[in-house]
Structure formats: structure tokens, C-alpha cells
Image (cartoon, rainbow, N blue to C red; front, side, top):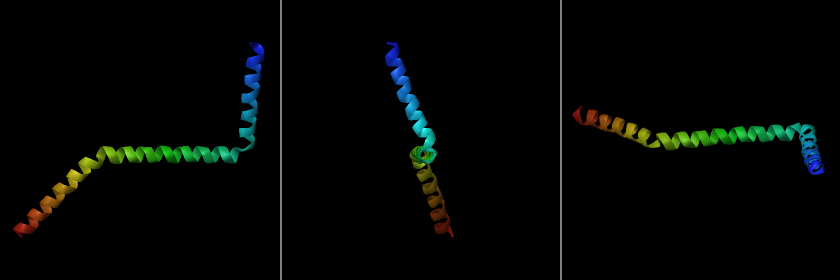
Length: 71
């Protein structure tokens, strides 16, 4: 069992060393993840507020039409 754990540790250590050498790639991946997360938050906000914003603008449009019809 111990040789298997040592082999697994060596594999992860070697992968970690490769990532340390290629910091530009790691930075690009991190920025990509941040941009993706921001996009998900924006999509969720638009989906959550889309209906209420539509109703808000409809009410403004109705008030403007009423003001124009009376004046």
C-alpha cells in the first residue's frame, strides 16, 4: 500500500512542479475562471431581475403615455 501512495505522491508532485514552471498558463487559467464566474453572476442577475425591470419600464411607459394624452 505504501508504494502506491508514494507513486501517487510523486505523480502529483511532478504535476505541481510543471505548473510552477508555467506560471503564465496558470495565470491565464485563473483569469479565465474569474471571467467565467463574472459572466455567470451577470446572467443570473439578468435572469432574476429581467421580469421586474420589464414591469418597471412598462409602468414608466404607461405614465409617459398618460401624461402625453392629458397634455
